[in-house]
Length: 274
Image (cartoon, rainbow, N blue to C red; front, top):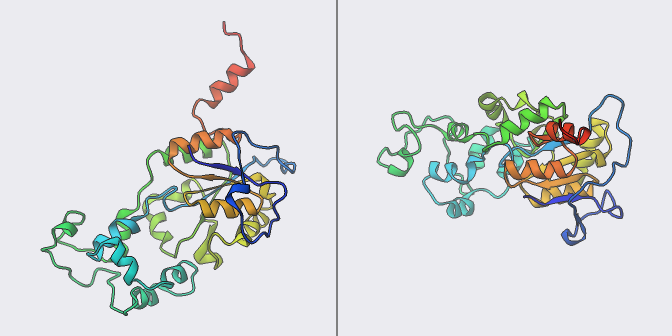
């Protein structure tokens, strides 16, 4: 089970930092602080995407693409270019020029031929048509185990859901492959809003743009610091571990995330069976 948080009543929406020890871990949700708008089902669910809904290929596939271990890649890559790309401040051509600190070129579109003698690379990709970095990323995108079934269930139960993610314009490749928008729109993507989590103001601005009190939002993310920022903004939060744990955590917060919830509700209304 992941960690479930709700905002302590004394925390200011614009506190610069949240002490994780001051945030309450709860097993049941508190009452909503405002009445839901008529006809709108609450809470609103805000989902991180990478490593919450979709496998992030950066940690395994990208080091293999560059034929270097992750530690070396992190030492050599430019410290800010990817974050600038995520915020929409640079385009992919500029990213290609600045991906590495030393300015070495990177292959985005598969124009350069890599050594076919590299067995580790061939084991992951077809060596008759070696991909560029974008294709490497695209091939690595996949729904995390069990998460698509959960999204489908939540959609069928009429929960309002939105993507809330730090990702560049390449989110369109995820959409093309996995059709995330079948379940939730790409409402809050860093490349279109120009800001990244965990900046507290983007959580506040998100709830304002949705016209919903932050207390009526549940934010789900695999990174604890992003969840902590949501708590500062007044939202409830869940640190994602896996789909099964998320079902349990959402159920504890009053969301009908269990496939058996309908049967449980019927049993509670009719405790004496025939």
